Image (cartoon, rainbow, N blue to C red):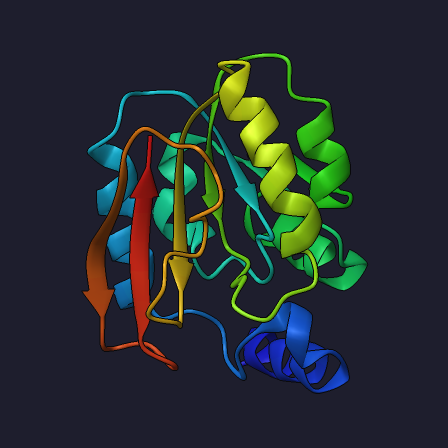
Length: 172
């Protein structure tokens, strides 16, 4: 319950960057996990881990959790002490990548100002061969990473049991 209250508080403070009034559902978490498991193995980085709603489903993959919010980081460290939790801006962490990785993006980009800086960075990482794949969800109908030059882009799953309903996209 504490997670949901904290999440709602963050949403009310800045709805553009949080994106939803409650954390992602277990159904979305399972859909993300299933999508990642269908891809080639890679070091996994979860961007915008928040309260860990998706992390609990991908934690067996030992992702590096990147979260800018300090309160969310405290919660993540409590709930996932075995994982590397990085309290940092996702853009700064992505600039430090020097090995091939897979990204799970837990930030809905539909109206997020972060997207304008995120897209060119993903293009750069993918172009250099450092970004192997990316799994992201969106609440919109359009391709959230359409401007990135991935070879393969596919809306993989639709999760109706999420508020709001979400599409899972897979890129490689």
